[in-house]
Image 1 (cartoon, rainbow, N blue to C red):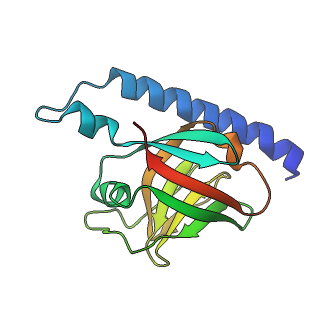
Image 2: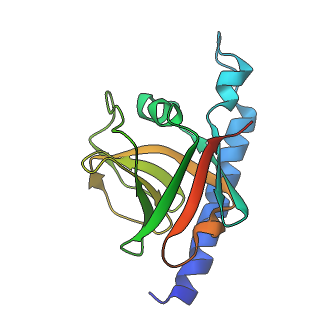
Length: 157
């Protein structure tokens, strides 16, 4: 599919994911015993080339393990014209994670067989060993560039 056709589709998909996630996050009741600090700790900012991408991490063991590594400065390399990837400083726990997922544009995932972070900007089929960490809710177009980018991933304040 030509890039000119894919980009508007990606932007619409990321906008839909963002609106849905923000609406869900805003309407969630606090979990008993969970502090506001813990609840907000699962929100991320990914800084790329002067732009800030906002993402929300899922509340699972692998996502919490990923959050424990932050902040991280990582080179994100383009992989297969589908995702930006980077090796993490250590492997994450995948205890209790599903065998795999079918990622959508905007999904942030961990690919356990290689130990790398994957941020999808194109649709991709089911992949064994892929664990969803969260999803981009705003600003994903900053990753919509060919080739590698330098990114800083941090917990939102």
